[in-house]
Image (cartoon, rainbow, N blue to C red):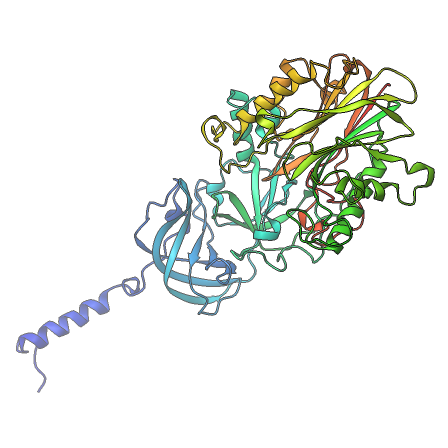
Length: 581
């Protein structure tokens, strides 16, 4: 005979009541209701659920567990434009997932910090359940730069607004490209005085417009970047359209797009050699460590530059392919091996290669300073065409002070054009670089955008100007041009010091808009300058740079793929001036 509830033993009665209560509870008690991802993300910099466990559901938009340690999940949205409807799920590569799968994830919310105040909302997965397959996700289209990337964090987007390639520095090492909305990113100190309100505005504008394109991996030195066709040659300034990927923030804290579809870059549009007016042409070019071993095909690797004889021959061919088309009458060179002026020296090797096979046109000579100039492993040099100009008197050098251990010793030589005209003086320069090794005191980084050794560069500029006022070439000419790598952008202290002392920027005088010779860290500017004395400035007829290097990938140079021609013969672009004699 069955027991009535009243007559049942207490323990049995309690168990029956518990089972009845469980049966009466909704199923969500066993499987918590999924929370909208937008609610988890919130509209602030950090999730309101940070440190708490939540359950979300959505569609897998990209699976980079092998490359980034997780996948991206996106739901249908919470109707709030201020919150992102996607997030990064940190998970192992154990479970089977495919893009388009609809999944439920239970986990703890965390803010993965790239740098202070730059985080990525992350769900550390504890349980993942595949609910079915929803089909390929559809990207949100962006026809303009978003006002706030945080509202799109983790979402799949397709950017139809043009993106300008601003830098390839980190492509080979990290699989990254720097792009920007609204054109190139400029070095702030190229266009504004460091410390000024205008400088700060350029910094803010660069940060706002910048976007990093990434390969969905943290692998260093990838053999092939996933989103680029094999053998791609990229040039800074190229525009991309219809770029698709996941909005992400990691590593250095930059907003980035982890690309889900390959880029389709156009063929590079490379410029022809520049043409400038004037009967007298003067060039300047940083050779990027031109060392020739023992001068007989041996002695490699050297302290700098080519590591093998074949690499050296490739480097030499590229430099010849750069210098010849400029058709300069005089050229100031930087980063020559400081190994004398004999037949086996680096400068003699370069001049011989320029003359080889040129017949009567092969009339290049070099200025012989006797020794040095200076004791640095690299030096400046001057070469000229004897059919076009004639050296006057002896070359002059300035030693001591900042030129002992830091800035390279300048070399000055007076010339006269064989077409007639007045004497003029060409001064080759190479100021101390921005690297911070051993920099102390006033030369340490002052965090004003001018990096290290700025005080030394300013002192270099002062001494250079004072020296030239003494007529060191004994030519009697006040018509002079300072050329070379000043390791300072146009609005930095050394260049402003020289302009304050009367030297005139040749590119400003010529009315050239946005000149540049160097691209670093995704920003464009000039380290290479031409400054005219007041007596020579009226003779200027044109100024140009040949953008064969700064815009090109480093991998295309002689030590890499070695593309045929002048392309990436150095890391600096050469410049060319046209003057009346």
